Image (cartoon, rainbow, N blue to C red; front, side, top):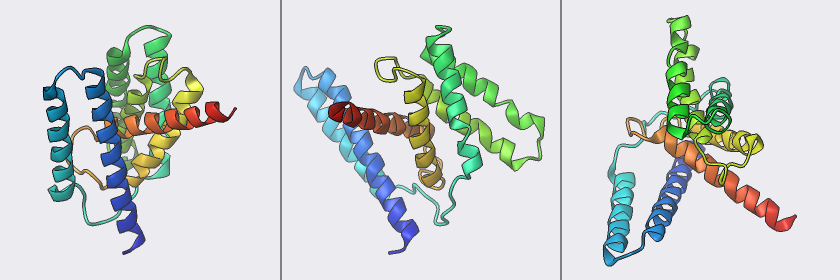
Length: 188
């Protein structure tokens, strides 16, 4: 098994675990009947089948360029600022950042680099949507941006054509950062 294949398989298993934990957290909050337990079980099976049978990646192993993912913190901080300091709310903040980023490729229509920036900035905007209960400050947002950038670099050709990839990467970055902050606060 070569290195790229190992990275791809590890990443798919990692995202599967993150999504199942997320579903479990949602259903745990609303655990009122047997229907919620059955729904969670069905959704987990559907996710697993999609991962095993779906065409989630290309066969070539490209990685996102580091200069592209450096824009994730810009989107995250801008969205966080609009959300928490100007009180736009999470949805309007992320939409404003994403809409503004969509105009960047228009500065030079032939630039391949500029065409890649809106997705990275919009991915960061999802991080900025976090509440202050989850992301208490800019340092958390920047740390989550770092982990999200790593995930986005590794997932360049994974989940091609599957919607929700940017939000899932941002969510995973926030989860990892929350876990790291929890570990640090437990030992300090």
